[in-house]
Amino acid sequence: MGATLTATSHLNRTKVETGIRGVLWFLYPLCVFLIYKQALHAISFTAANEGGLLVVLAMAAAIGLPLTGLAIVQRSLPAAFAGYLTIVIPPLITATGGLLRVGEHGGYWTALAVSVPTVVFGGGAALSLSPGKALVKAHRATALALGIFVLAHLTNHLFALHSLAAHKAVQDALRVVYRNPVIEPLLIAALIAQALSGVALVWRNRYRQGFLNHVQAASGLFLTVFLCSHVTAALVNGRALSHTETDFLFASGGPAGLLHSRGAVTLIPYYFLASVAFFTHVGGAMRRNLLRKRSPLANRVNAGVFALGVVVSVLILAALCGVGGLSRGV
Ligand code: HEM
Image 1: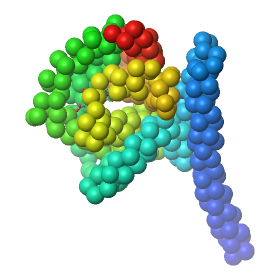
Image 2: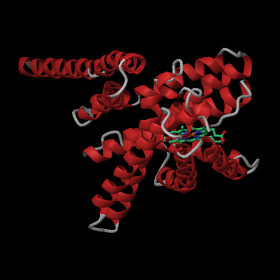
Image 3: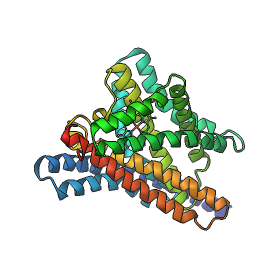
Image 4: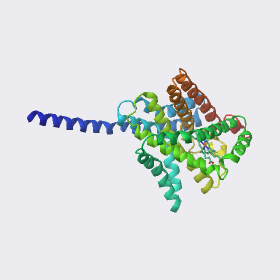
């Protein structure tokens, strides 16, 4: 009897300790958030005063800090979610700011500001209970159409390295397709389906193992939070509320670019990591597909797509910071 009681109280104590330790993991994203804010200040400061290598170092610090979340994702379930939260800090900050701005307009706009995160994250968690392979099928079915759009969209931004006029010419051509009154709602519907099924998959497979599986979940979550912010910024804050032309100057915070426009440095890790997350997520999906077919190329294809993503993201970031068309104003 005495032995049973001792064993039960030991078990309860272990559970409480595990619970407390689980909560403690969430101090990690909090600390990173505080240091991350300083890294953003360092970018503005060095850009205004020193320039050169120090700006690049400050940018690398701000981009690298959220990625340190990957160091804890394999420790336990709470650690995995604390790690994911650390990684999504850049889009979380921008999304919160954007949704608050939408909410300021009251009425339907407040409802929209509340419903976007509720539908995506609440709906995704609820959908995780859906049976069988439906979620995976929905995620794959929408991925191809979205992938084509995002590749065209990112390629469009590379044209800003040549000139703003070239960026505009390509954007105008692409808009004929993605702003088409039939295609645009389909694109948005595909985005919602992709985000909902993605959140559901992260939650359903929450006991996942293996570093690359965590990377797949984290990059998907990053894109989900990014898209909540980015699509609201372009379609709602930009087009519907401010009637602004959502062109390259809109993305770069103005003609001075991300480094020198007021409040725009937050967009540096945000855009860079979004584009890297896209290639990481696609590369990871291709790897799984190839592994299923027992192809020996799976890991090499994954690494190649990731490397391509880093190069493309560096080039887009350079264009957004003023390299090419922006600095020449043409
Ligand atoms: C990395 C740098 C990026 C920049 C500078 C950027 C910039 C922009 C701009 C300026 C628009 C407005 C387009 C227009 O009015 O024609 C836009 C729209 C959009 N972007 Fe991005 N974007 C970036 C990355 C991404 C990524 C990675 C995704 C998806 C994963 C994405 C998805 C979208 C979507 C869905 C729209 C709305 C399209 C529409 O219906 O008009 N963007 N973006």
